[in-house]
Length: 281
Image (cartoon, rainbow, N blue to C red):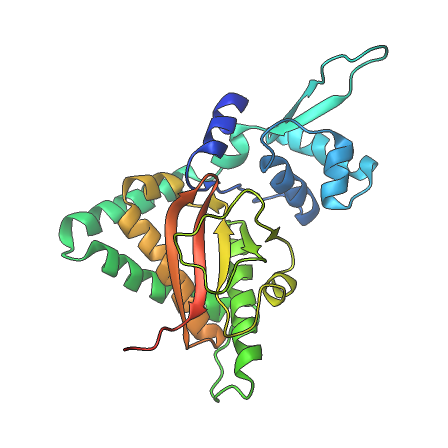
């Protein structure tokens, strides 16, 4: 088992998201514990994970033991601070991010390299491919069937489309986090700030707390399923991801919104902006 916490901590301070966590074969409860564990820069206690997940400490301990047995997690003793045996602290291993991802990353890099060599407009072609992909994914997603009628409530439709798109991104491994206090008139270059209030978990509640249909909302994408390929060909791979969002929004019923993606915009995340379409001057 390869364990490299130092590299993981260095990666968390670099611009852009971390690699997606592969949870194939894990139960939803165990996968949730792994997601929380992987998001921590330092080893954490069972008590801390219990508070994060809302699970009983004994349940968290059982899930952690399964993750350790599978090679996704490891543990070490905390520094001694007096009498008694120090508590165990837990951390995710490199295996958690790498398992099952090598083949897909290699394919993505090969396709991106082909577009890079043959296309006159690599980014635009990446976006176009992403739009097609996003439409297909959204159509297959729960509740993703496009409506044949014009929506009767534009604001509700926009909010629902955004929350469904964020849920889709969650399923794809992007670990999205809505920035709830993002000012609606902020420019895309605005810094997230150390005190930015992010909302994870229920997408409907997160989007609902971030504004109405006329607002812009910002979403931090803290994981990337194709991080290696994105570093090699950011214009293409990040363009595909932007197109994916636009295609999904269209199928989910928000045909009037615009979206922009800032790749590697801040330590630990890319920034996705969902906003009303700008009127042509």
